[in-house]
Image 1: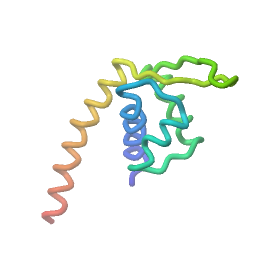
Image 2: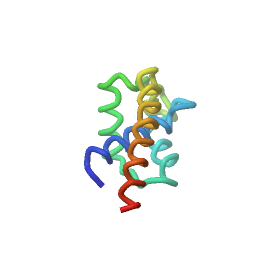
Image 3: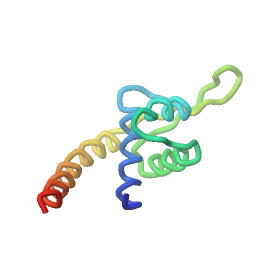
Image 4: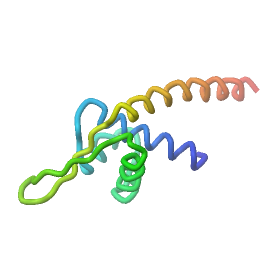
Length: 101
């Protein structure tokens, strides 16, 4: 898969994982695991990129004596999910054209 396309898919999967409720790293990995394998290092790179793009916000809390970061999707992140859905429709049209050969 093209690296840019894969990057976009991974970003949107992470955003979708926190669309309905705030979450933290381990839970995000667990939630997306039925559809893709995501390492911790890849996830945290994605989370940092999404935070810098203002698509999510981060808050820290204490959990069992440790600091845990929770991620919250922003309006910009929600808009990105919708944009991706529209882009994917275009990709599927291209795929159908290619398959017809």
